[in-house]
Amino acid sequence: RTISSHFYFFSYTSMSHVYEKKADHIGKAKQTFEMLGTAFFILPFMRYAGLILLAAAVPLAYESVRRKIHKRTIYVDGTSDKFDHETLKFWKQAKNLGSKLIVGISENNDTMVKNASASESVDSVLLNAPSRVSLKFLEEMGIDFVVCGDIGVKVVTTEITEAKQCIVILDDKSATVMESKSVKKSE
Image (cartoon, rainbow, N blue to C red; front, side, top):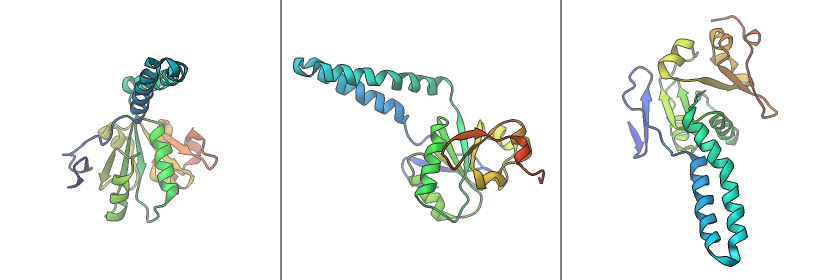
């Protein structure tokens, strides 16, 4: 099932279409700084501006290479009736923790599927995702971490928290690995 020519959905039960939607945004920013810096550096009266832009590309180059060497796949549960700017902000924060973001939607919610596929932060949408994420699911899908907010803790099982593969984004926008004590033992 395709909404646009650049985005494919895949189902957990039948993973036939997996497609990375967008190029690395850090790499694009680095490329832009390098291009403008080189163009300005050629002009004698703009040489200093060119040097500043080229210098700004160095940390971006480091981050781009780091993400290519050590790819992290992040999973976020997207099963929700609420979609607003906070959801988009949360997805962007989750994407910044890794190199690929998968949003799993467990129930048939066409609006959320369309919104997730339209977000620049989301690389893939997983249809028919499990309502509670297990360690087996993470291993099957090649997911490194599950990211959730304070209220999204009910999505993960205790085995994920014991394996330290759940990251919680707190209200103050800091991220921390969830400790197994903070999740109830109700699986």
